[in-house]
Image (tube, rainbow, N blue to C red):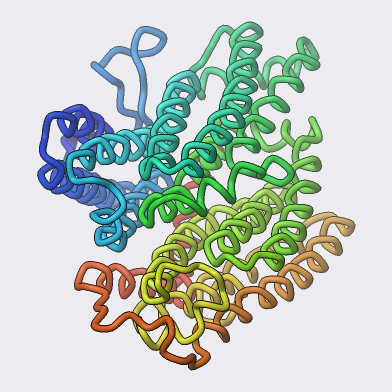
Length: 497
């Protein structure tokens, strides 16, 4: 049984090694290696989830068996394993659904370069989930950023390069703030390991020393992660980055990249600073305000779009706002709701991007909503995926998005009265706005149209249809069988603190 404790390290190491190896392989071989690495990492994470639930306790894996500060540590609990499993599964399905488009958008001789970025991105995401050291987390934040830029500009179009440049500039700003925060924390505590940092921070608050630098460090870390995860108003880079990328890149970027940063922020709040101190600094109030603003203004921007991909991208701004609003409620139920929404949004938004590319494929490549009329009949699996994903984002019962909103409403009832009222009103307004643009697009794609945009003989293909079917199943599972997942999240957060 002790061998199982090595699996978290293997799940990071496997894609990390597969990336450089892919550089000397043919495109098809690199693709197979990447699918294998993602699949095995997912299996390892599934085994770790079973193990942590079976033992009921998290464990720490010491790299090279050297204790800090000479060595590094990985921490694995049921929450880390659950999120890692979800990341691997969604990446696998996103690659599977975008396989047909990848062969068209990227030249065969350059596909191995694409899968270098895929492997490094997966390794960085899993490292952000499992790391027990803040500086290691920062290193993999940078690897994540570089890999994401590679995925954005994979097509080589002018718009993609411009989008990657904007993403890099904003991400470097966020990374700089995170690094300054870590420098301040190291200066006042002398530690970078999360558990040791927490002990020192508690002592600082008790003695009343270095309180101001600590508050600044916490604020800089939160703002840095907010910029990198596209919280309103730091979202200007997001529509182009998501909207002009390849099918798989859009699905992975929207579903996973920002969630890796957010999960690191959750660990920072719980395992480094502590939720009581976060509330004392007032950071949660700031995140609450920007989260509410993102919920509203992200949806307003989405309504104004005529391009289906940009509409889905702006919707992500609103959904990120939900997550930060949950943080800002200042109650444990709000954090549980946010973590659940990370899973719901990651699967639902990836499905929407994959399905949108399928609908565009049968509409002569157009992404304008007028040209997409009747596309759901020409590509039934894409139409079904877009319908289910849209209804989930709106919050229709039995689907993942509805369960998320119920959890947020329940969390609001446990918050202070002012936040409760604001949250319930914002949830109602945001749901109406979600319905305005998602239902409009669903009506459009299911409205019969003349044959002008019909592509004869199009078939989605086994990989695409299988990906879409799995995404739909995940959305229903999160909506209808949420109780065990809720319990695992609650147990994992309690183990954090």
